[in-house]
Image (tube, rainbow, N blue to C red):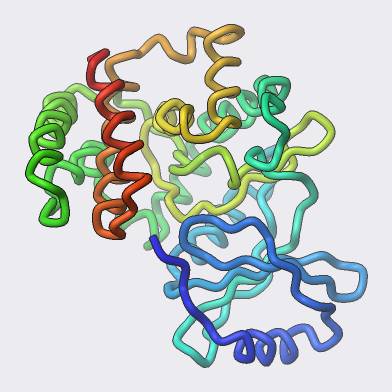
Length: 295
């Protein structure tokens, strides 16, 4: 998915009005959809992201408020505003740490326990927090968990080649057959956990970022996301190795994990075909084929 184009001058004017004594912008590691920069204002450190829509930023603000009393480190959202060029900016306090993706090769394995603990904290939020989240318009309007998983069954594959569609139809059928058998677990799902959305410092998780894909559902989906991307990113591979060697019970529900991984893979493929991203198409086709072979 392409990053949004935006006017640097419009962003400067916005920051000048909201933070008149701010320092220069410094590029940050970005996600798939937003442009991100760091800046300081006095002794405080901030991050500003720019996107074409504000829904993801509003979700960040909702999650920040809901998790304010929890042990999960989530950056405070300070301000969400529209820019002059039909873009939106979100300013949040910048928490310390390096992204998992920025770690040296093999470095994420030693952090496996801390990462797993954070996954458990996200999955184990009490019902009062879940009810609060479910009552918000952002989450209240979301599809049910089975319907969310089944959205890939109805995707339009006009951009895919005929040869690819043969395999895609087979993987779609595998997901469709599992939808009615999904667990009834109800917890917070980050939706894109790992890599650049997790910061670590001194052996601990120091921040969990970008909650734009968050929803109420089966928290095992976040484990599936790590599994799916293992051969794309070393930090994901190391987390998988930690699970396999130290906490294999997390991988016990193989059929459900396969369903979730294929759902992630089909969504990834759909976006890759739309963007004509040949490298990602080739990799995701191979990855889905590997996962389906174990179904």
